[in-house]
Image (cartoon, rainbow, N blue to C red; front, side, top):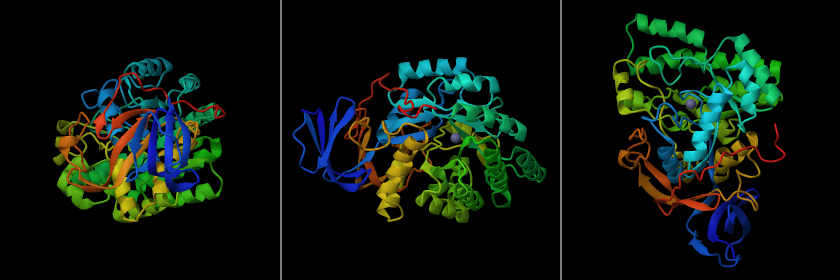
Length: 462
Ligand SMILES: [Zn+2]
């Protein structure tokens, strides 16, 4: 007898969406059959009103541990993942000490092994040339480079994990290419941004509006020039380039052209680009609490279209919690506020709300949040799809359930969400991680240390 049968869910399977039973045995999916066809399991869940999706794989999340655990830690991350349908969440390297060296990465991995109750990995920093081959040996899925180094504040883009000189980028790309792993880059033209910032500051413009406008200056010039350089360097080096933070129309055009030319490039979209920073009214209302970045609606619409058709491959959260006292200074000085917004807990609901509105298909949601990240970063077929033999990482959500997001339910240590007050349609009911219900009809069931490093599946050796 299987341990559990999910009965009659509308399941997004690899060959289509249909009513199905899904049986779980140990950590794996043991059978998938037509609704009502599988024998009874040790536990039965009536999922007739629910959709079943592969557990979300978030390739871009700022977990904050070690070094910034006043903002977030692995325990609060786990709660948000479970409640949000995320079974694998991959950390970004702007922690302290940062995983720029194998020694730092080893310590970080040890902490995760002990403490994490979600499946995890770490995107190591690709800044230190000599460390790149050693870091690649630690079972990581990708490297990350920030082209941005903060001015006016010391976090989140601190020195030591950012570089933007073209020659420096070129040599890191060559080194990462030799590992076979993808290289994630936060595009940003630092030299141009320095000049743009000086114009705003010279006029005495420093508040959150000025900050938002400076980053979006000249219709997104800092993003466009950075991506143009990166795509050209990708062609020169052959590295597997993964562009972060897609947010302009021209970046979408360049991405389309690069893909059409056969370049090895993939890209992510973030929740804030579609549902937060694309609305000036929310920036006026929330100030720095709404900023990651301001994305003018014509850009957001272009990115959304490219996300829908798969040109922008995946959605990753860029989950970036900060305390209120770290956001408050932004009302008068946007450069003093820590930039970024939390979203791990609610992004599936935001996506399902768009599905309910007919803007996105359920299949594309599964593809963008699980299957394609798993394929790009080597987790497939162990993870990323509802298939027999795969890890039983499954989300069951009520697609008709409505809910108004509130600060009071926020499980992040930061205690707030920029989505507070928003009505969503699509509510997570159950999350299974390797067969275990870590979110069980609304109850968190986490066990410290249950999480495992999500490494590349066999046959995907770098
Ligand atoms: Zn980020």
